Amino acid sequence: MAEEPSAVDPTDPEYRDVGEGLLDEEMGPSSAMAHLYRGEVHRMKLWRERLDRTTNWAVIIMAAILTWAFSSPDNPHYIILIGVVTLAVFLLIEARRYRGYEIWRTRVRILQENVWAPGLDPSGGVEDPDWRATLSRDYRTPTLKISAEEAVAHRLRRVYLPLFGVLLAAWIVRITAFSPEPWVESAAVGMVPGAVVVSAVVCCYLAALVVAVRPRAWHARGELRSEDIRELP
Image (cartoon, rainbow, N blue to C red; front, side, top):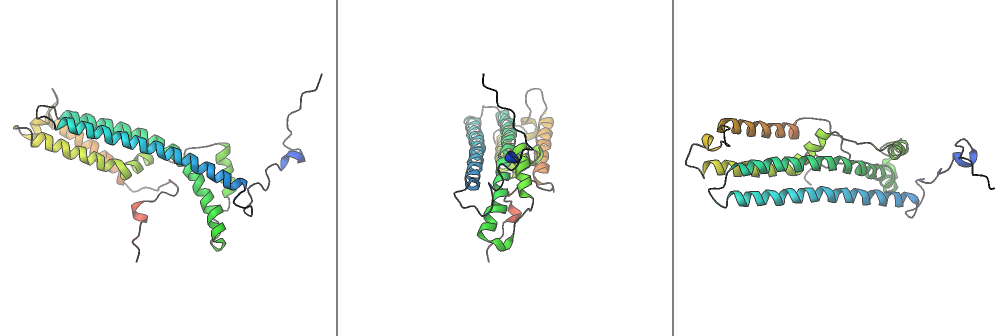
């Protein structure tokens, strides 16, 4: 009866250096490094497309709600507030997907900064001398790179603040121009007084603004923000 192969001893010199030199900088564009980079870019692209799908659905549903809300003066105004809640749900879903997207983009940025950039211009050196260890740790134990609050802030600044603004403007028009009553009274929803509804809407929008614009140390790697954009001379 054949003997079962023994487990690999990690201290055995035959296996200890497995992979050594696999990702050396001098290897050409057809090396394992190029295939690794191509795979990470592909994964990043797939998660980017998931973000876009969430945004597309949010815009479609928002357009449908606004169309129905203004199709007749008898339609209740609070359908727009339901649209705000629905948009908030899409925001949370997209923020969660953004945190996943940031895992793959971080790896791509590490390779761009420490492999391809020095390869194009060696005089600039590498961004992180310990990038190999950093990337190795992330492959062994993938971790989320940014907090949920930062992810929400990114998506608010990029997409959702303007969408929330459109819904707010539509709701204000709906309770003022389409009702003969004072706007505070027309904002009432069932037994809930209009003043309470208006206060709740104001508090929610202020909270969104605080999350989006408060000063913070951004941890998203390679994110192009508006303050980083400069006009060309």
